[in-house]
Length: 324
Ligand code: TYM
Image 1: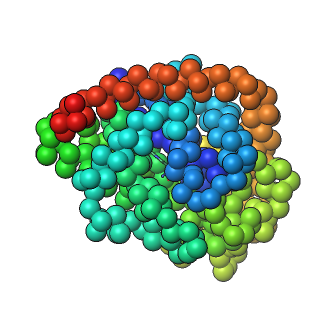
Image 2: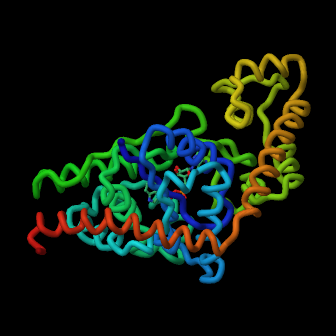
């Protein structure tokens, strides 16, 4: 069975964009792939995190995966820092990653602008650690949102470069980026993607927002000029809201446009607010029903499973380079 690998950072405010762009697809792919889903905590610390908050966020992301439908009986859900080979391989890949290609990473450029006071080496090296996550497990495909496409291209380049230098070692992974939902836009600013680190909480609907708060955010979402509920290039805000509606309900955008023909933005947003708040209420019921201690136990067992695979790959890598 082919293997997929993906991950989410345990930072605050995991939002419906993360769900619709990534985790929803993981759940669908579980049937056809062997899956490894990681809580990428070493990535999260490239921006300062309060230790006690980080500790809880790590658990919460694992709980989120399960509450959204990732099945822990068939999937390895584990925490990145529990398997030290991720950091070890990153160091090795650093030796073949070029400064020039790293400087082209748009996420680094954006984050460097956002965190001017703390442009650290980890932030710069972030994509190499991501490549290590993926390459350690002979990953065939990586389901992610569009913002990770460039990092996936770098991962492929590093894998091919290593294979050329040292002989066939890494599987060259493909991205799985769905056409719909790969770039959910900010509710308050449909020019940019919905983002955990947005300064305004009106930008996103967090999966842990109280359903009534989420409904308010949808009602206040920016809309385009005109009044027709229609998607299209000239209507980025409506297209975004229609995409969310469509992905949450499984109905096509066309169908939804027909349902709201002749009605205004207000009615449409009311409908969407109800769908999103029902989804959150259901998610939060499941999230709150999971027990922290059981999750800790699960993560520990799964880290052992991941470690077996990672150690084997590192052994192979070290032999190829001449470290063993
Ligand atoms: P992170 O934690 O920023 O985001 C997690 C996933 O959510 C997707 N995503 C979005 N999709 C649609 N619309 C949006 N507005 C939106 N915002 C985020 C992201 O594309 C991602 O799939 N570098 C990764 C984490 C990572 C990783 C990996 C992923 C580390 N190692 C290995 C895959 C494989 C990140 O920062 O994701």
